Image (cartoon, rainbow, N blue to C red; front, top):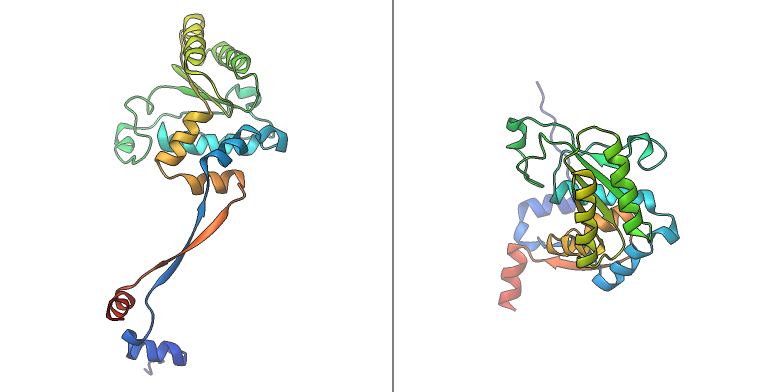
Length: 219
């Protein structure tokens, strides 16, 4: 049987023969995103009708930080008849062992609800969402309210305590400051750029290969 020989271009042929004569560096492009610029962008999402994009972004952040077992939301309208924007689904203990992100002791067996909003009056929206979720009688033990607005820590704690007393559900409010902290602490800049189509400037970075580094040291 005749073996067909691989065909290479002249450059590829020479590179295979004398790799030391060719550059082995690579170019990486990364988006740079200033925190102040991003904060303004997030706080004005509703003026650009990006509510649904924000829901997708919030879900992706929560999957990485809180728990990865979140259901995909279907339907044309946020929340819909389900009263939640997303919720956990049960996962076996064996499957949970394989989690690398959002590891939590009880999220694989408890029912948690997530409500996402860009409404300016975040306090009223949280009350409405949590009470509607409670009315479903599905046994949710936690509700996470994600907002693109800024919530002062004392007011946030007061709202959480009030809703806990009213519903018996552990309520956590995650505001724009929490989102920004998670983005920059965990290097999720590209995630937010992709999810929300954030306009940004890209910078090119040359990563020296071993051969190029040796050449550079000789010069």
